[in-house]
Image (cartoon, rainbow, N blue to C red; front, side, top):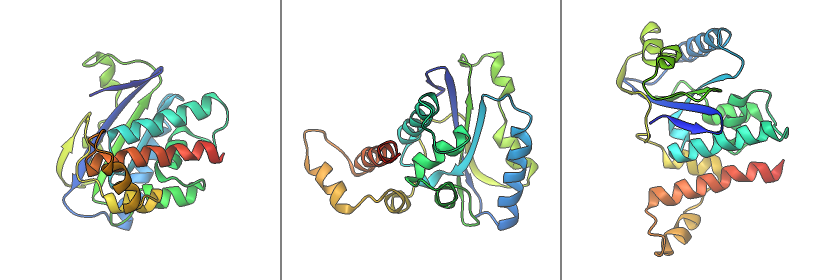
Length: 206
């Protein structure tokens, strides 16, 4: 499902790899990403990140919105929109620490690919031909995946322990929300709500 925030179009894809990455593959992915970014328009951003660090698509979109607003209000911490989004996802103010927690590592097996374009894009339009083909991206690097999903509205196999650790979410926090039965929160939804709230705190701490 193509998402639109203000004048931006966001495409989220996901790959579950057949086996974890290696140091060499992480380096190759980042080098290839940079090479592609150098050819893209200025208002076009790419993120290739550890999907296990994202509570849900809603959490990711919230962080993208926060990052866009930060640039609009000129109170961004990072120099690029992609890096600013990673700060919100991680809950850290230091970019190096944020990349350690949200970026790719040799243990990563669940990857989210996020492409952000400045122009509103109509679904199934010819404009989609200009999008980066991340499935082809992996194939060129000889990285095998058990599944690849383009333009998703739900992320598979998120790692709640990693999300809780990154954002400082406790079991007590989750229990307090789930105890309020008026909202009918499941555990996943409670973590999603808390992840969004914790990511929002980065704005307050600026």
